[in-house]
Image (cartoon, rainbow, N blue to C red; front, side, top):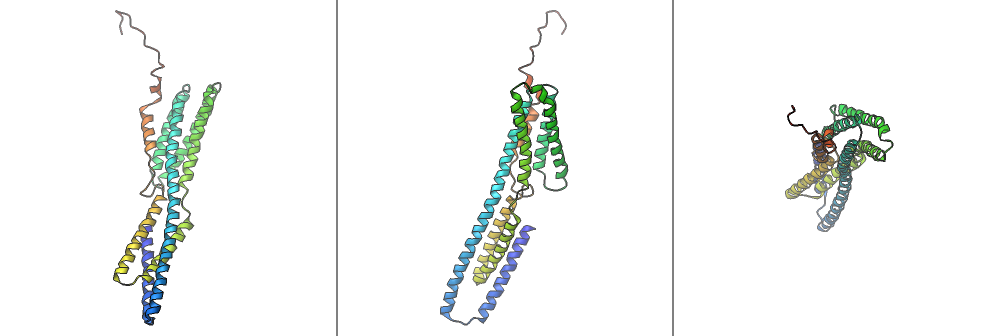
Length: 275
């Protein structure tokens, strides 16, 4: 729909530009000198308009890319925070270890599903589940803290849990951060004006084909910027591979798998006794 609006607006502006040019040529007095002077002025105007449009597109593209890079780095930072907390949770006593590990596993699954779900009604229960798990993880940490208070490990565990919770807020803020609507509005209007100016200056069948090709390039570049600026509904999204790898690691390494070196050796069976 956005693409249709962009190309429709540029087409309407180009029709207006062609109509104004036809009206101008119809009433113009044929003077070669004046015509050459006017042609050079129009060429300068087109160069200035195109240069400013390129500047606006580049500025908007840099804003969208900056937000995309922030979202992509947040995925890795959150995966590292969850993974570190999961490993340090294995040093807790039971039942705190199993409880917090289960919360972390469920939280990882929820965050991965939330990041790959398009905006809409399906996101609301996932957001509620994510917020509830944050509260549950901190409540479980509060319950486990008396057992680790005497140890230096307590500070590092609280720090990693706090980092995990902070990343929840950071990813929410990054997903709600977009290129300001006013920037897109100015870019749309200027792109339509540019289409009208080019259609007014370029005359002839070949020139009009060139103008249509330029309009296509302008529209594609603007659609690319809009796509990058939409975290989940666009075609270009940040990779969730770090979260996918963390999810696979947690499933492959449940809490009991970390006890294999600390388990007592099995007792030797005496000869002649039943197993």
